[in-house]
Image (cartoon, rainbow, N blue to C red; front, top):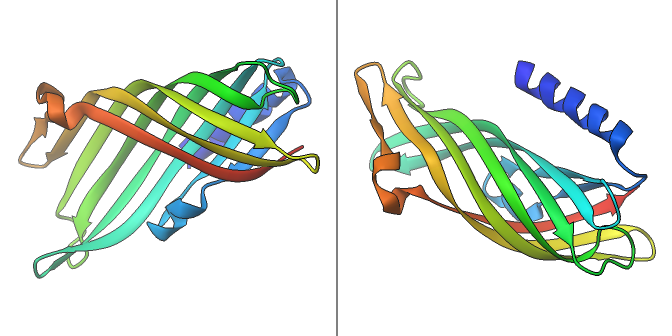
Length: 181
């Protein structure tokens, strides 16, 4: 709850410094995987935007006979530079991102037996955003980065996957539909 309150205060604070361009976007594909993906992008200038994405994921999955529940929370902060915008922050962009998420995976039948995970990653992304005359926004892009913290643990111990390079690749996809206020 404190994380959501902090993110809300941060968004309100940034909106006071941002230009009149504020966009709210959703990723409809994330809903298919039982994730909530709502982005807010603030126009800091005609060429610079700051995209903030809270991470809220919850789903169930089966491994053999066992059913597990995953809950994940965090945020992605993504400053973007727009090349040759015509309507403020639009068209081709290049950005960097920082992603922090934490959560747990637990047996549905015994939620006391769970594995906690923490991940911190940074990377770069590219994309293209279209803004219609009616202020509807279509954003598509992808990013690639590295996880510097990638830990899994429970009461008996844990493993730090940041020591294994293949497990530290952080890929992100952007497909968002929204509205500019």
